[in-house]
Amino acid sequence: MAANLNSFDAIYQVVQLIPQGKVTSYGAIAAYLGMKGGARMVGWAMNASHTLVNVPAHRVVNRNGLLTGKNFFGGNRMQELLEAEGIQVNDDKIVNFHLHFWDPSSEL
Image (cartoon, rainbow, N blue to C red; front, side, top):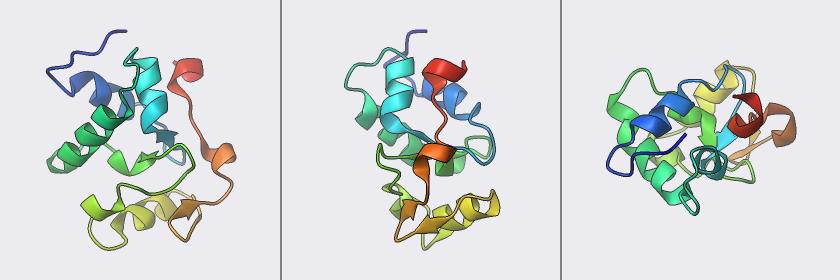
């Protein structure tokens, strides 16, 4: 699957497939889409997605499980959304990240 670099649509399509209670990383999405070094682009897409109701951007974190995008949600909204799905967060980091990680390259 190749990403259209002029559009975030391919990124949004992958993010829409992340199951509730799971998270993935910017890099995992970029790797799945064949976007070598594209983690930043995925981050830009997540930052731009807050006007879209069908993109669960709160499920995309950094490779260590840190809520690096939380500032774009305002307050603790990203953490609240994750905790509502049963994901525990402590000090802006997902507890037991490996248990909640969803890898699009092996799941899709």
